[in-house]
Image (cartoon, rainbow, N blue to C red; front, side, top):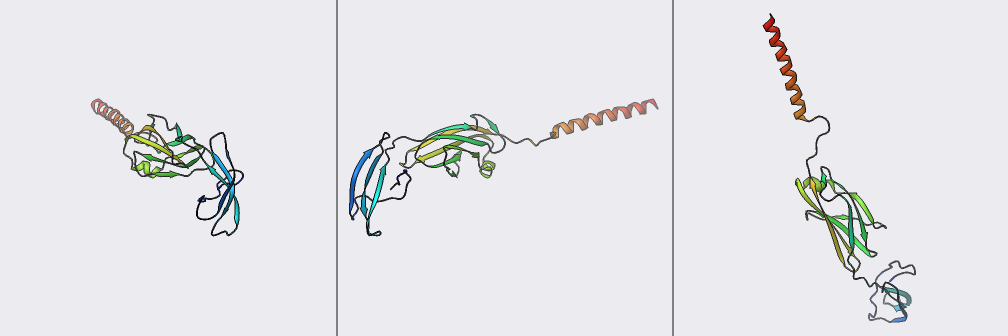
Length: 186
């Protein structure tokens, strides 16, 4: 059942064992069927006016992945940004290499963004990673899209240990040569 603004109010089994009556039926440009009528139920006792909406939706949700970039290299859990084309979106989630699902809670927009779960990212091995985003609508139409990225080791900020060891080695050689020259002169 929907209110006059099309907001879902609850479910009703039309044609159940109690009295139901349709006064008018109309179909909109999206082939959604609306039934205006009355219903008498066991629990409410009197006849209630209702508006039923039957959604005609045979299309799978379309997911566009704006980021992370395909074949991108990431040391830390990457940020994601996706767009979804689906007016009746029910739920959305993602997986990393088909590991346990992490649910992304849906807000009122179709633009979704955030950061991949860091704990899940930390358990993934280095190398190629497939992130798959899934969506399902209220009619159980299912869609998905995936991106392949590479997980790399993060570099500790600052100087690398190899650079520091090389620099120390050069200094030791210079000091040693100076000491050798001093001993030869004496």
